Amino acid sequence: MPYISPALNVMSAAARKAGRGLIRDFGELENLQVSLKGPADFVSTADERTERILIEELSRARPGYGFLGEEGGAREGPDKTHRFIVDPIDGTTNFLHGIPIFAISIALEREGQLVSAVVYNPVVDEMYLAEKGHGAYLNNKRLRVAARKSLAESLFATGAPFMGRPGHARFLAEIKAVMGRSSGIRRCGAASLDLAGVASGRFDGFWERGLNQWDMAAGILLVREAGGIVTDLEGGPRALDAGQVLAANESLHPQLLKLLTEAGDEG
Image 1: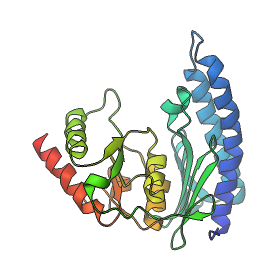
Image 2: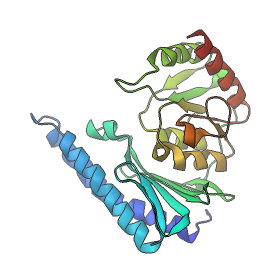
Image 3: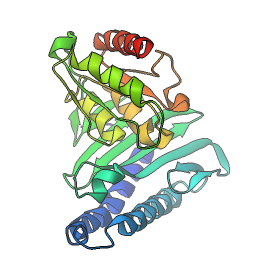
Image 4: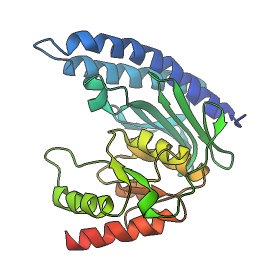
């Protein structure tokens, strides 16, 4: 059984409560997909409502904590040492199109260090939990990163730059390089779940640029507590601040970093 601190218990309960509304919303999307107006406004409302529920639930249990959220931005609380980092729907585009690959992501920082994490996909009822120093779990099962050591045997996940954002040429060069050396690449569209996939061994590694802190904070702790290595794409410790991440096991991380660096130099 996982060690669940009082804070992590509050976070998982908040995710489950907010998740019930998302399950209902997701069921309604099938009807909206064929309407002339489309589901975009509906999804925006769902995003805002989910974050509101999360903040209400978390604030009730931890009234002094600050927040950083996708919808509400940064909110300081009286307790300057603690902050929740919240993404109400990571994978909004998937949600918008009726694809069940999205998650509620909640991380807790204490004095600038990630200490608790929840990533919850309500549609498939997968709850990832991590507590600093106590491991990572999926539905009470202990997680470990995959043990593969060879790029040729490995399956990697990544995220592509959105329309209008820079970096497409570099991304294509990286894709070409990794495809030529690995067993495959997946682009799932939800960074928190991609990182959870690394923590659970479903993916052997993940990299992406142009992320926000709420996209990856919880996932970073999951990977670390599952025994993986997480850095920015220069191999440094500033993934959250730099908005870029590279996660893999101890053997594959330096190999993937070298491959991506060389691809970027050539691209």
